[in-house]
Image 1 (cartoon, rainbow over the protein chains, first blue to last red):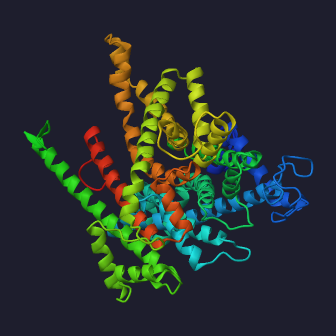
Image 2: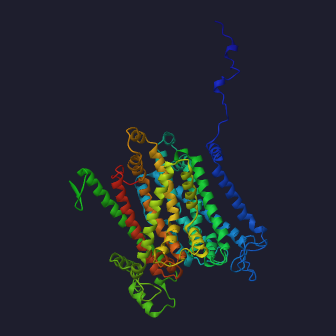
Image 3: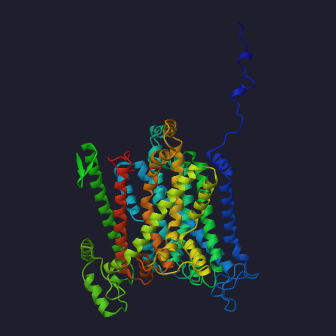
Length: 312
Length: 327
């Protein structure tokens, strides 16, 4: 048999069965594709984006400020100048609802971010180190869990109210951030720990360990990115919880202080004059209910999209 | 035969020992949790600048003398703590810091029964209506009763109790004049607060029951039961519901917590003279000794009841692990 150099030339064509029919997609693209097919979650997402725009830019288009009082026009119903009416001090209800949206969304997002960082760090360390460290860390979480988080938040707010008197721009808002941040990470820590516990037994972690990757690198580069789905769902669901908690605190007089307006405070003010001026309740009530609904739906949708195994 | 309070338990002795070990461990951890909560609350209240425990504020001298004597303010902090703890152990939660002659124990004795009524009523409504609606929805999956249940439960989950309560009050008492808008005493007074408080847990339980029932209804043993010709009511109630109800029992703990914190709001809206309203009032009044005492009282109740729920759960669901840590 004659051997010619031509026989060693590479084949021109790849066998067709090896060609990718479709471009490969990442986990996140796949999740986004699944989320897009969920109409309820998409409507909620659009609602949340509109609400964000309303809260951020709305106040710039208003002729009033949330603290402007007009004693000649108190407790008015909706009109052209005041689409949501005015409150008992003649303040424009629309700008106050917008301002409430700013506070509620700020509380929600700050809570989600602190939940994310503290919970992931705490749960990640406990789950990865395991053993006695895990035992002590999770016992701490269990004890915090033994009374409702609202009771902790109320206690913290009672203390912070005196430690950091509400003055100037913050008006109690930073105390709320701090109180929520100190408590809200608990469920996240549990979930992250559970994920890490099951992930760390898998082969790719063994592989990383055998090539001598440092522990922290394994935790933050290999374990936590793989637990990102449940982490994001938990952080998203912390947002409505935080918004509700802020409203709750404002309602019992521990929230932001006047003249600032939050949705809970507006509802609580409306209760005082409910008999004569029920319209004051309508818009804050709608705003808070729709927002909680939207975030809960989005969270459920994200759970279905990011982690099909968690689907209920 | 293993006996519990004279009642024979049909359990092997080994399992009974495991259960006993579980009960003892659970009891110890509950006591530890209560101790931590007391300690943390004590430290919180003492860290308040200008609070009762470091007060130079102008309060009536008689009360001031009372407080100083009662909390041994002239002694170092750790002795104050030991003294407070031993008082709590003896069941004495201390005097009010604002009102002369009021004690936390007195406040609890007077007001807790009212909150307890509201709480029990809420519990009953949430569990009965929630599971009922969930069962019906699951039996009519994809038909009108199912859609109605899911629609109302979605609303129920997203409308906070204070909005629901305020709306009920506006329509049912101010607009239509059907029910009294405030206070407590007659059954008419209880309707709106119970609905406002029960709205969210009812909705949640309905969803939980529905999904759990759907799981069970698709199991093979349901087909077996049908194939061997059991009557429909028996299949549903004995075979399906009994198994599907277990997740609802796990929700009892969170439900307790919800009813308790929810009472702070609902009792305020409807001016119900219960403990929740007083707790909020003492927050407004900065009555720190009462806040401290009531927080401890609430914690003991919650931790104790949650422990009972855990015990009940081990009796109901034999699959629960009795050994090792609860996960």
